Length: 134
Ligand SMILES: [Zn+2]
Image (tube, rainbow, N blue to C red; front, side, top):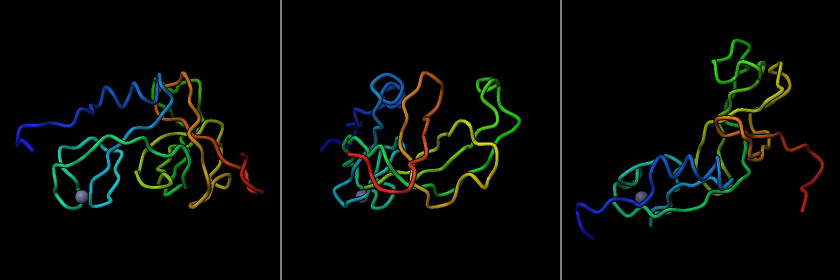
């Protein structure tokens, strides 16, 4: 293992992954840590052994806030929720859920699914309770 070797993964590849290939990309370390954040070394053990991994498309809400005053890119989408999601199997990503007008519409721990869109950012959708779909 060379000290100068870099992960093949890049921020551009990550963006292309979710915008064009409709998959969320991240890294896995031999220690078991999984991250969605581009990095040269494992944030947990420091090893420079990160390998590219496809992350799950489902997860749980860790935090969220309802945005009523949007940035320019989301001018026609407010209100919406800005969300922090822990993906199943590892990796934490930020994204957004359209059509959320009140905090009471979401809950921490609620299930969400990556919902690919032509819009900027990683778009999620709520998974309704009452069982999983095949
Ligand atoms: Zn590690």
